[in-house]
Image 1 (cartoon, helix red, strand yellow):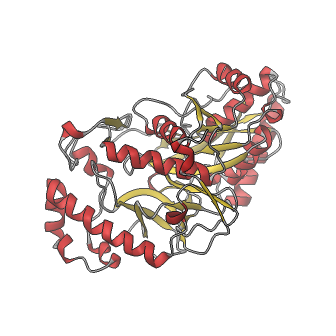
Image 2: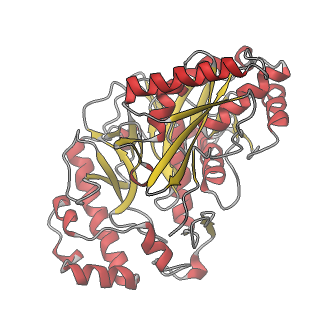
Length: 449
């Protein structure tokens, strides 16, 4: 029997699409659609959100004067601080009574970021996540093991609704209980795994210890996001789980997962859904626009959000855009792999480095596993950075000499590859904490000012 969800999925010119007319729309037509929606969302924000009205007026710009997409750069940015300053509902453009769901960040560094959705917002989110899953190679009828956290975090419910919209069987596993999750994946015959990449690595390790070879089962696709990760970790996950590992991108302030995704045909950047979002790259220091192909900070404007329109939101994510044709046939531009966040960049003895670069350098090194933490402390007037890695199970727990030798080899490798000099400590097998959701890669122990 064909369900309504399945009827939205097509095979055109040998490629799988969820919304073929939109996904392959000629770029000039796509840009006309963007401009129509951009004017509408700017007017919506100006009329209904006092913050935007003050912000636009203060910058001397008006939605009524828009003449083209190029005018957007004159409008002021929105930042995470604006969300915190207007906590909890000050940036909503609709009455609170019309919201049917709220999500929020943990608020570990201050007031949480609160986001809300109308029924229309949730319908669009489910559609975009379903579209993303088809691009990743997921089919209606697949068994989707969803190990993203449910609750205030957008990952779990966003993925759940998209998979359900596509017509999949969803296992709402959430985070934690890793041994049980491995058993459920094996018993239920999961074909798709959705989780953070660090938790997928944890699942692979627990499966190995439990004698469960997930590579021999039907599992074939992994959708991994919510944290930066490297191509090295991708290769590790693909080898250990027997899957194709797909990068998915999203953030709560914009929508949640499903803002952009790799297609399984090319895996050469993440298609950003331009009918719902407008993407820019700026210089993270000056805020000036950068050209297609140049690296910088990603800025996103939502084009269809009703409850919480975001105008030129600074994501702090570092990437670049390309509009080169993709062999999958989709015309929407692509985001290159997120290398890190501008506010996560470390300066180690004068060298700028992102945690994901350290991860990429560590994956595949002999004697260690892909778990690490960067510990930042204050030593006098300077920052002291220590990299903690973990040796693999072949190194005996009491073999301190072997661990010292491995630490020295890692330090030499980082110096040669990244130009970074830092102290390296090799921990015993199993000593570093395992991810139950988003991995904590940087422990900042410096005194708070």
